[in-house]
Amino acid sequence: MKKVMLITGGARSGKSRFALELTNGKQHRAFIATATVTDPEMASRILKHREERGDDFATIEAPLDLASALTSISSETEIVVVDCLTVWLGNLMHQHGMSDQRYDEVTAFLDTIANPPCDVVIVSNELGMGIVPENQMARWFRDVAGRLNQEVARCATDLVFMVSGYPLWIKGDAPDC
Image (cartoon, rainbow, N blue to C red; front, top):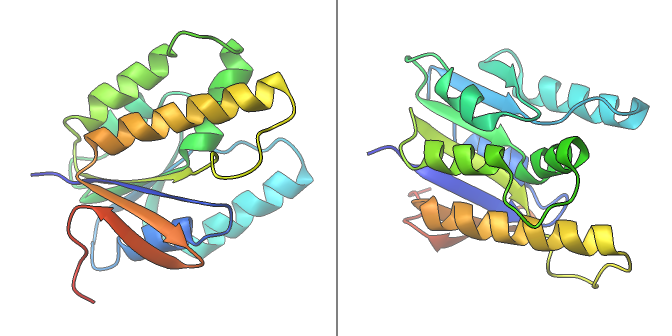
């Protein structure tokens, strides 16, 4: 059975590093990147992430269509890291605007992870643990991201919450270290 793991937590909590560590020992790894270059600071972040994972991953850039990216990976791929859902959701919001309806791309992604082509590690930010945002768009984004995380967590075999670089296993069995 293929595993789907959701790793969530706050900003700079170690989510991406932990996701990459989980792929150690796998020969055929893929990385699906959702970020796009929007300014010099984001370009620097993307470059840093590329350097951290090195050349050991087949990288697919998928700012909008995660389902197609997942289904297009090589059949040899043992594990894929998707980083990150909240950036992806922001891309969808920019593309389609705010909507009370679920984006079609979200439905397609949820359908794909219900029967993934390989083990999947998904990184997402936990946004609902702080101050209520002061503007409507930020509150909408927080709410939609929270619902998306809940839906992915329901599909996932494993759920991990990162705190200060340490994983807290919420669902599934933690590996022996």
